[in-house]
Length: 583
Image 1 (spheres, rainbow, N blue to C red):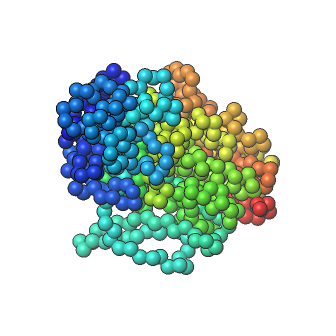
Image 2: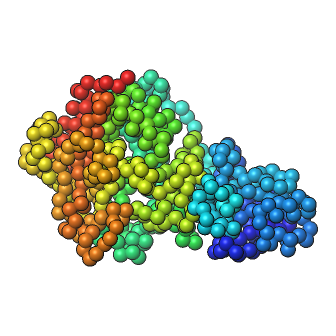
Image 3: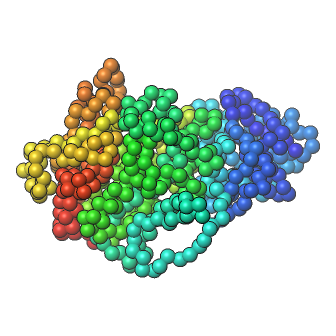
């Protein structure tokens, strides 16, 4: 038995072969690619879960099992020629190119021979160039034959395969909210696992829905970039004191739990998939990011949840998964939708749902920065498994390989939404402009006071968000600004903008055509800023955007008695009092 494979560094003309026991597990009619000794791999709802050992690392194209001495007849041949040999000699050849149907995504069909489909364990990366890729196409959608490979890694993990500790039904009258399941050991150690309870049918308790950015939480799940930042000398973008403390206390995330979409595999290629079916050690209420020493992502959004409770607003909780699966229909019962501090990863279905909500009279409060940025796909809608491709633009820690930008989950181009013609400015008025450095307050625009006086009620002076938990102000970390060329709607009112960001605040890469010394740093570039904006939509909808990750962490300063808190009060009260024209 032999397998025709390809070396991980093959060029289009390379042909290599390896023995089957280096790449597959073969038992009867079941073939598992990419792992040996796969005794811990079990089948669950049509896909594999658990860990294997002795993993194959690298690209594998058109694996073949043949009987007899036909190995020499296979090397150097194209896929259709291999299929002919297999038909005459006996055996099977499997197709590792992406499958269109979600029902078969975890399997690779046999192209020739009487064999069952091969099982893909832990989602090796598909949609990658095969040995016969000739660079005349950059998409598997155009020519699947040139994308006959899958890229296997020891760090691929979709389902850790743990058995449940307990299964129980939640009370039927449990209000929608963010909860935590506390686990305790006999030694007194504890862990709190977050739980989002969404409203059931007909159980809405509020006109406000908080949309939890769960796909973004997944993207950052088990992020392990502290040494990458050190190697790149990028600590000027963060809080040096927080980073120094974090480095001294940092314990690298175990690779047995899988890493984030910001990390890389052992061969340097980027990680494309992140799953909720594994432990996510930084998805915890007490987790503080090593970059700034405070809550960010899920931890940052909990500041907003605490503020809503403190301010007395009733709200329901929805997640990205509900929005992806149900679109605008899941928002029909709500007048106001508010985001967290960093809603970065969205599918096309999610953007469509938010835009339909807004355009049909809904009120949208975008309370973050660097939102609606990366094209995202959903591999599995039952238990979230998300996919991204970084492409070749945008702020990133790895770039896609040539020809490998399209998503196998949705069969659409990956990368930035901006480069797909859906820049964030089109939806919420502002989009990614800069990142890093210290935070600053927003400086009020005098003209805005005349145009929207209700927004400034109770706000004294010309600053909003003078203090904050993230680097000291409400405008920081990652910043969004208006840009009419990218789709900021006519009539958008800039309420306030940040100014004079430090040198560590740098322009977003996709914004640049030419650079020269000092041209892209805060002191020298007036486009490095956060814009706080408001605009109405013709059918009665409206949008309020803050354009800053640091805004939400500023709400609780001085026990909520601050200008950022007052501004959000005014917006939500205005939204709730405004006549809703939604049908």
